[in-house]
Amino acid sequence: MLKNALSIIGEYFIFLKKVFSKPDKTKIFFKKLIFEMESMGIGSMLIVSIVSIAMGSVITTQTAMQIESSWIPSWTVGFVSRTSIVMELCPTIISLLLVGNLGSRITAEIGSMRVTEQIDALEVMGINPASYLVLPKVLAAMVVNPILIIFSIFFALLGGYLTVWITGCITPYHFMDGLTYCFRAYDIFYAVTKTFIFAFVMSSVAAFYGYRIDGGALELGKANTQGIVVSSFIILILNVLVTQIML
Image 1 (cartoon, rainbow, N blue to C red):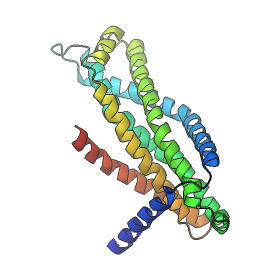
Image 2: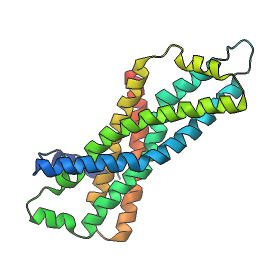
Image 3: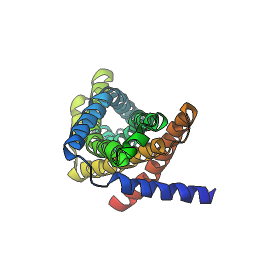
């Protein structure tokens, strides 16, 4: 078990060395990078916005239910909701959502090319398939995912605002007062940094499991599942480590 895990880790780092080699054709590389950024960003915006609004609404409702004492000011609901959304819920939960959305897509694309021997054809042509196929996806994810998290934070706070406006649990003025109370730009930096790291893990691990497929459609399904599980596990571990380091 341990020997097998160490072997896979070694394969992963050898794979990364191939991925981060110089692209064979820079012009084609940038075209693929722009295409991947557009595809990942636009393709994920709807699901990210819906989940974020729902998440912001739920955390605001739960916070308002827990803080009902007259000794606690009403703006505390906005403050606690903002802190939870910005520092933990959006960076981590949305990143895990993107693992299932973008990560599975990357594994399926790379894996299908391995199954249909397109990667072997690139190798015969003298092209580094790891760099040609995977590097644009990894860099695109590292650019797009933090941007998606910024939008996610906005939609989550919007969901909280709409919740207090509709339910009347507190006044929208007090909620906005809590959102702006003791705001630190470092919180946004912390959230974006975590997402940047998570994006690298998600994209590289997903591509790795697709790239190393040896078999057919059945192995592709197994690789997809393995990529999602391993990426999610690593993200949760890194979440703890990054939080301890940065906070």
